[in-house]
Amino acid sequence: MTHDETPRQHETASKRGMASKVGRTSYRVANVLMPLGEITGLGKLAARSLGHTARRVARLREGIRQEKQTQLTFEEAVAASGRTEAQLGRKFLHLKRLWWVATLAGALITPLLLVMIVLAAHTLPGVTLIRALTFVLIFAAITAIAATRVVISQFRRWQLATRRLTPEDRGTFADFRRETDWLAQCLTPF
Image 1 (cartoon, helix red, strand yellow):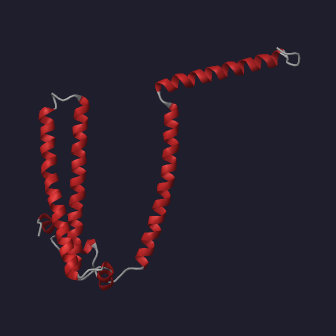
Image 2 (cartoon, rainbow, N blue to C red; image 1 turned 45 degrees about the vertical axis):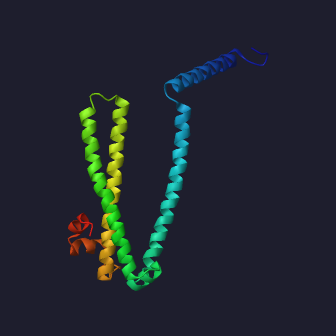
């Protein structure tokens, strides 16, 4: 205790020092059990990433809004592609077949892999089982993406065949689904 300190001030400073030591010790113990520093860093990184994503979404919305204002006619869209209608038809048929084969392969591999995992589950260690199930999910996702690409290619082929592109021409995906047997068309590679 210094000359200028009263006993009461010394006692208060001592309590603050003790509370500070308890706080630091508690943080260190908690940091051993839960990596608080890393969690804080991840939180800051996630917040920054969310900010970037929000800005990208805003730019995307603006781009979509501008695109809707500058909707091309069918002839303008074909001319902008730099290909003839016949070339575009062949391109979309080729893409449909490519994605159809990828979808078929995924549709065969995914259940086969799942059956193999189920049959061998009792002999696999937990980590290997989790990895195998992760691969099943990845194959299922790839199959779903490929199937979506088949539908998109068939939709583009329909737009070429009907020469309809804009909502005013009734050339939207909803029109495609309503006017055709789109599922049957997507299930065949032709």
